[in-house]
Length: 543
Image (cartoon, rainbow, N blue to C red; front, top):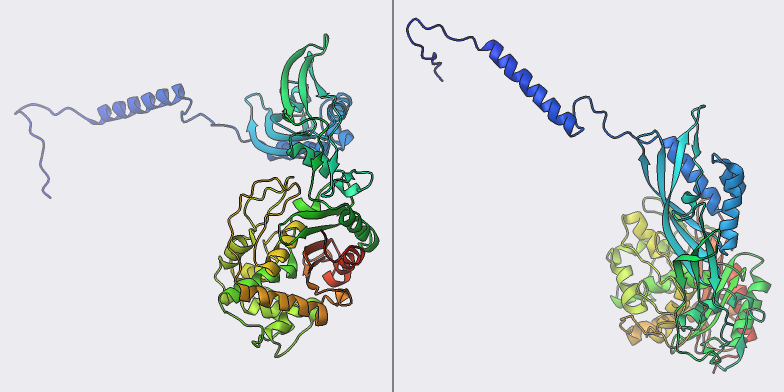
């Protein structure tokens, strides 16, 4: 490229451009700065302040104490401990709120140096429902540098103030009579495990309790608004009972079995009919509180091998007589082992199933695709689909494994596979009949699932394997019961430090049963006696 000098007239002195450039540049900077200042984006604007992490930590501690019912500890974190403790207690007790859930959200710094942490409140109002709303915890830095919750009534609820408060109103009506499948009355007095379930059953039928949380004037008591409404109007006659599929005999036997054989541990059990999915018994220990049997989320452990075996048999990946070695250990990213580090060299797949050999099942992981366990669970067993049981339920989850270690764990019902006794009783019923029936407590719920029957050959093999588990495997605790009883045991790891959960599923006649005992160590030794006690106390086949 050639340099070209600028053209000039003779005798004309070119103007100096240096200062002009400087002036122009200076003007440009000034203009840019002015525009920046106008938009609050100038070179000297500090930008939005970042909230102090210690403030958010204090807010989370306050919410955690409030959620756990530690009102004095929560109040001690505020600028007005006495008032805070009094209000927190009166709010939860006065509105009959039990075990709230308070979830922290976004943290925001204010211009005055305060910090605000948003949160979502889920307030379960006893026997009515859950009141959900959003609020925020304000915090202010103290002279000593520590953060405190800047107490205000509005942090409990945005509309709680010095002039307005809340009042719980319940509709004055007796709950409906709830009966078993034969018309016998069911009550929490006779069947303690049903205490938390009966209001849910009534509510699902449109006959449940109704009420509302009102906002009222503190001075006059006049209603200023309704913050939450519970229940729904129903055309159902008040004297018409709500019928269930439960069987009073089975329910009593299930509760007695847990009380006698669960050794005081948290446990749950479900029994249901194989031919239609009707639930005969739902029992929990302890009987009050969380419904582990239907809403629990557990790793099902080796009881899940029923589903894994189905996946393998469906594609002829293995046959019961095939040799599938069962070593003590197998490493797939981590070391897996069998219960009590047992091993069966040269074992057949039939032996692997009846002895519940983890390493043998894990060694077959390449025989199924990564999505296959979940697909089989959903397509044939309905797991993970939406179930309409008649009360709130957890319907299972079988995520696609993220790596080979998780896939190995999924083969034996560990990893992220989640179920509960309701799901595993249904899995058992489907395995031995070939057809999934959506479990139900009321018999009236719409079936929202879509499944495919298992091939008859697969069903026959599953029945034979479960029968052999009783006669010669890990479920011999049932071996002397009458009838063709089949079963599968399970041991599910919880963590490296906690004892394993014990699982046991079984079928006899037209009934499938599943039981979990938390910290039961092994299924055969903990959940097995519970199932035996139940089956020993009830007829071979319910009507």
